[in-house]
Length: 302
Ligand SMILES: [Zn+2]
Image (cartoon, rainbow, N blue to C red; front, side):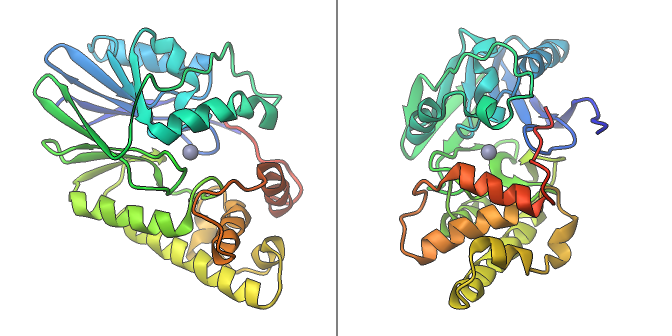
């Protein structure tokens, strides 16, 4: 596997996105806002080494080290590097803190061969329920909770004066959405919130920078999963059987297409009346993704 080096894009004055190709499992995006001699960081990285590289990139761009870090959700690729930025204040949704503490060192269990380095689980110190506004110099940073979507504790980071939105994993550019810890219905509602912001630049949770057209393809995929789940469930098929018989069409080209079975598990749970975000058996979902992947366990790319 050849993995390119992370790179920095500046979509607007004082706004930087840190993209880690290829955007696959564990290779998330981060970014920062710098104004008035202050820096706010959005997300960290999955390994200590990658978080240190992110820290170097912030300094190399001439920004001071962040005073605040906003986590878009609890997943380790977005939060494992939090401790590298101590003593920055870590901000996240109420549920992101609870989920992060509950998940603990989950990535080491899923990917024991990956060298994560010294990871100290560092959950948000400051949590919020609905929305929160931070001010970085003159730049207004709105942190919005879209409801249960990719996880139960997602945050969207919206810079209205710059028309840039950091979506976290509500959007995967060129990758397959992943709903195992969130909600299908909630993910569709989250797209409505994103559309209402009228952003020019979309920094997705994984993959290259994009624009609001990414919401359309994400929505088509979510509706495709919903329809497959309805049909499969009517025929009495398991999520795995439904996934194996599915024609991915335009979505076959997206990375991590094996996530289809995970997303079907979520869609089935919702059709069965389970509350949005109700925990699934993640290890069983991972086993099914391994089957979808031709028997090869999914790999952490970090
Ligand atoms: Zn995630």
